[in-house]
Length: 287
Image (cartoon, rainbow, N blue to C red; front, side):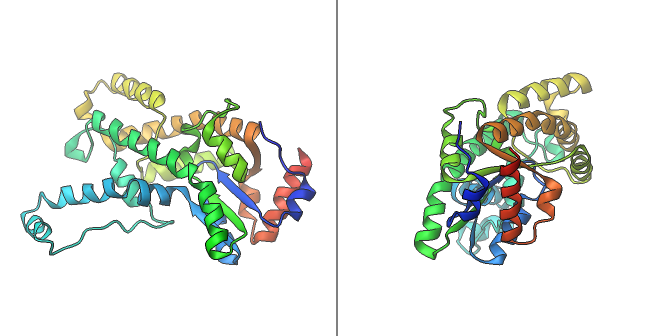
């Protein structure tokens, strides 16, 4: 589906453009930030773009909706005496995940399932748009700021909004035309650690619609509960490991058809841009 560069061509490229994908927590943002901090690389965060350009208004409106329930804050808000904004950053995406929410018992902070699906769809549309902005930002980074090297830090749910087996998938075509796509592949031990972390602090995330509705029905049946009695944290904990298993073959297909894969432990050992260049070159030579 794509023509990968040779190892020598990669080493000699005067404009290195790379996109990292894979499970959240395996080093995409870490290595992208490291490249930015080393100098010479522009760091484009897809999740940040989603939370600012495409879902920023939804997020802030949600804050305002909560503030309007408090008479003191409502009066100040209506008189333009206070300003409510989202302070989302590359390393703090809590405003976005809080907006996505979790389905279940409203007394435990859960959303009605229909509202949850509506917000999931908003995220899907936003993620596709943010991914398609990658080429624009690669050009903008060089045109405005002189950055010739570019790294795209994609979200963990990228595999849910594309079809890696479709040779004409519009998103993957656009991305692979812009950057070398690299899967940061975790081991079983990494997956177990991610599940442990998530169990300790469950967070909202995006799911493919068919997968989500299937798991929701399965959970309701398994727990013998109605939608409004679901414990939101218990549902997302129960779903998380299943979501990782669902995503793994999709990531693998993306790497096989559209890019390449590197081990998470090898990415963890990267300390600078030269280390990354060597790692990618070794991977290309081994193909």
